[in-house]
Amino acid sequence: METKPTFSKDDIALVCGSANKKLAKMVAKKLGIRLFPLMLHQFSDGTFVPQFQENIRGKTVIIFQSLYSRKGKEGLFLQEVLLIADAARRASAKEIIHVCPYFPGRQDRKDRPRVAISAKAIMNQLVAGGIQRIMTMDLHADQIQGFADIPIDHVLGSALFLPIVKGLNLPDLATASPDAGGGKRMFFYAKCLKTKAVIICEKVRGKIKEIVDDMLMAGDPNGKNVVLLDDILATGDTLAMAADKMLNAGAKSVIACITHPMLTKNLNGVSAYKIIEKSNISKIYVSDSVPLLKKSPKIEVVSSADLFANIIWKHLNNMSISDEFVAREY
Image (cartoon, rainbow, N blue to C red; front, top):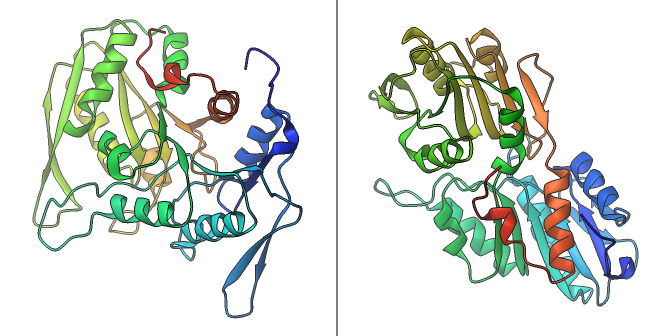
């Protein structure tokens, strides 16, 4: 933020649910506003109701909440957003914005019979609940922006990771994607890092779709310092396998930049933390869109607070935010 905000702080109500309290507080501090008081009253049967503790009539309400799921909290964070938005709408808020650092849109098309398009279904719920604008980071697929007829500000996690990779001053740099779907991201990083060495991996699956049996690799990692790039880190199996393939093919080192650190367990019940710590990846940089359950010596968190504070501030001041999601040279 280059200049002092011109909007009135009294016209803003930045609230958060249970998902990103630490990050929401950081964003509020950078904006020079307080985190607006909100009570989530829970009943004995597990249901809850949100209540704004002060008047929000005519205010711009910003709901800061990622929509990830954790064991015992499946669907909770989405439900919180819907009920907070409903409370804001009924209390005569002027505008309701959902800042969603992580949007759960992995199923963005019907790729096999009898499946839901979950990204579309979730977007429908948010719009029906009264959300008028969404700000998010590194969607799993760009086309999700067209799943709703409201403005969606889609910022790139590269704004967080590119300066770090450049600062490492790695010689013989190569960018890589652990699957074919990340090719666009890989070529974007290659352009910004001014390298022509790119490597794409392709998963070979067996009878069980969730298990990767092998991996094919296009590109030569021999003698390269490889940067693996992806949007979501779930079990860590694919990332570890890709790193092994590249090191076995002669790569000097492998680091990774992953936007959303879900860090779940695989089908065998092995934690992603354990897989990563045993892997040959030297360092993984992740954002704080999803809070880590614990620290890991191989994982370094890069805060997205400045990024989200910046786009919120620009929106409130009717400024262009195109620099935040259009490819830039770093």
